[in-house]
Amino acid sequence: MKDQQQHKVTFASLIVTLGIVYGDIGTSPLYVFTAIAGHDVLTQELIYGGISLIFWTLTLQATFKYIFITLNADNNGEGGIFALYSLVRRRAPKWTIYVAMIGCAALIADGMITPAISLTSSLEVAQKALPSLPIVPGVIAILIAIFMFQQFGTDTIGKFFGPLMLIWFTMLIVLGVGAIMGHPEIFFALNPYYAVKLFQHHHNAWWVVGAVFLCVTGAEALYSDLGHVGKRNIQISWIFVKIALMLNYLGQGAWMMEHVGQKLYANPFAGIMPHWFVPFGSAISTIAAIIASQALITGSFSLIHEALRIKTWFRIVVYHPSKHRSQMYIPFVNWLLFAGCVFVVLFFKKSAAMEAAYGIAITIAMLSTTLLLYFYLTSRKAMPQWAIYLLIALFLAIEGVFFSANIQKIGHGAEFALILGGVFFLVMFTVYNAKLITKQKRNVIMLSKVLPTIRAVSQDEGIPLFSSHLVFLTSTRKKDLIEEAIPQSIYQGQPKRADVYWLLHFSEEDEPYTNYYKFTELEAGLIYRLDFHLGYKIHPDVSEFFPRAVNELAAQGKIQLKNHYPALQEHNVGPDFRFVLLDTAFLISPVMPIREQLLLKGYLLLKKIGVSAESHFVLEPGTWVKEQVIVND
Image (cartoon, helix red, strand yellow):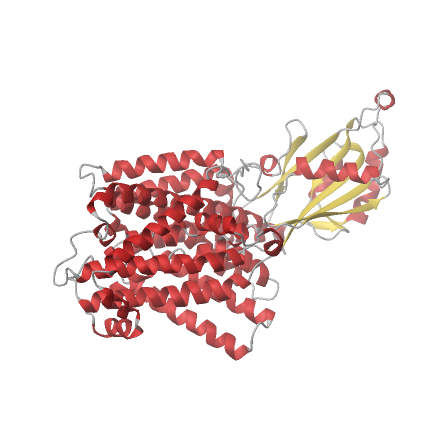
């Protein structure tokens, strides 16, 4: 397994884990207590109840659900909502694809809100030392720098994230312990009694519960980043992270206990800083917020890349700016996230206003993970069925409470996150279903029926040679079937004579890094087929995979790479290869069902936004031709 082979637990690996995994959940002390107590007069019930809820939320959701349970659901070492879906899709009902889509859409929406709230909160802390600091322009300036940097990759700067986050968590501990010394009784707040008491008696309990959920919004990253650092590194480093978080929350609670009876007049995180330390603490907070933003951006890249692989997103350009294929840059997603983050900052202006929009998206993502986790545990028979029911019921109950609390924020900003997530879900829903419709309408025939005609075209020297080797991309999995459009392209209109015809098929596999091919000689010396089996993390790069496979087959003697022209053969010039891309277009008629019309029209619009097939499959200029095939309903 990749996790076992590549992710050994060392001190260095644990430091790297701090930088990659914990940016989001690690910066939550910047704003959680402001969200909990920002609207109320401070009371012991509110402070103790808030701390108790934070502790048990981190324990049940982050520690129990993700660290102990979900991290075990790895797909060859990879984690995340689509990795989990890939593990269950062959055994689970077909509708689970929509559960994965909902979770993905919610996480991308969170990717627009998290950088905005983290950076705004950090600059608000810095404003204590620099009262004239302009928050909104400062946040936008940092966002511009962060998003412009993405095109260069995170390989180099990523090496600095771990040590910086170690400084951040150490600062959380030191500040928290310093404040706790003024009110050590705050440790009693860990008792669940205070959480129950607040929930039962506080006049604004639902709002407080919704605010408490902000402490665990980065928990999905514990699973999504599994492939980067490995399960054991996450599980061990979490011990340190949780201690640091709780000590800081306890310290903030101790500081607030000194102001019982007053309204919260300052960010408690800034309040526990000694005055002389504020400039240093503000700088470290801003760096931590930048790291948290970076983690959400790269996480969004991974999500969209995986959505592309399971055909729930339209084609867009994906770059790998560093030597690691797992690190990627997707320009469309990058600038879409940037526009969303800037809009959030300009619209809400203050972190307190953003808090209502923050949380509901991750609640939905967690519910999606829980549903898929049920099918995973059931299919693997990891425990008795009654235990699975009990476990899933526990998670659904907790997340249901948080969802109910966050839904109360509709009208106060939560609707913004729902609209964002809804738009992303609509895109995935449209692409996925439109591709199903086009697949159903695409005509396929038996290869044996058209084989004589293809052979005749290849042997007719009266037809000008189109290419020595002519390659068609096919979507059919069965080797005895072929899209009707392919033979029509060969012998209708202007015939395409070639010595050899190739059928090239890419098949997506559930495991992320699968990479192998199968060769089939469909007609001796005339028609070959290559089936590439690629994991969902591997991009179908034709310019890389196809020549390598052809050269290997030639070296094994399975094919002959001979130029058509004797004069060129004498000079050892290899044959030419040409690719034919068939762009299937469907005539959308009024007699089609309205649903199909809307889906196909939406998909055609999205295709215009996306990239062409030649860019997606990385075909070199001059090696391909494109033809449009019109299909009537």
